Image 1 (tube, rainbow, N blue to C red):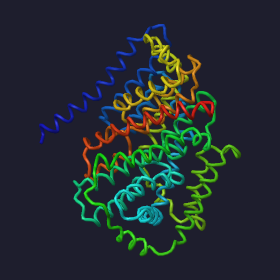
Image 2 (cartoon, helix red, strand yellow; image 1 turned 180 degrees about the vertical axis):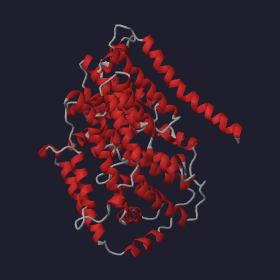
Image 3 (tube, rainbow, N blue to C red; image 1 turned 180 degrees about the horizontal axis):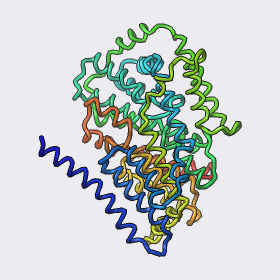
Length: 470
């Protein structure tokens, strides 16, 4: 045991030393005539990405290290290092987690999940469709792909148990992977439905001064969102042919019946969620940032008399994720203000043929999809991908007079379709713990769906985006 612990400690120390070495190499490798803040920011970014990849320490701890390193190394003042925590995206994610806690304190999630599966009947194909569509409907009300997965997973597992299916059966794999991929796809069309969307909109506002509203996002992304659902529904049964044609959903009916009519808490929750969605949809009129309705919803849920859940329950969220987001946003801000993003963009454009290759919109989309998927395989954390790749590519877009919105949206969507590795998306992390599918099985399905998503995105870029001026 001691030898194993010693080897573990040695590995952790090495994984910490590697980012330190990367920082030092970058500082001395970059030209000395560059401003120190630019060199230090690039070094800190590279070291932090390495820490996020190797993960010798928790992701949130790396973000705190970034916040401390920026002022200590004179890369950015303290105000810039902390700017991520005064950002609307950070508070939207925090409020979204709290809203989810509020919903979880009622039976709404269970009621909706059971009803969604019952509504589509008892055949495997129809239940798979219900599994795919349920997170899409929840995306209008519940921010966070992982939260929607957590709400729906118990109902899907109940169907598997009711049929006494083996965890190794194709039918079980089909339903759980359907939920996994369906939850990721549910983040595409609705702006607050995914952390990546919120961060991308925030970067566009901070870097370009361009506001992206609820219906603007939906107008751009709906074809990708719409077509990926039937494609997934058709592909998965081909890869995992179900052993049974019918599934027993009577246990779900009984459980739904036992829940009875909507309780007072559930009615209050529904009203608050409806008001929140209305405020998100009308952002272009009242100009309240996306975070404000979510914060208001959290307050109403916990407000004595009006609300239905106490504060102690609401605050039981994953604060490490909030810290990670805040630190990542601070790093992105430092990249922009120091000129590091523009410098890195110039270096990328110096590659032979790259500038010419980015001259055609369809080729731009194809190259960005390929680049994003490759980068996402190395940097598996979605916020890290969005917040380090998009600022650099936006600078390239500005230098080449490309549409920066097209560039940002393409990277964002490709990041959401990280279907190859378990750790690339939170829904896969949640469902993998069931032990029903293996990483190789996800990779097999993920390769087909990743290729399909690329075709859909390129088709959308060719047929739809020119019509709306993108």
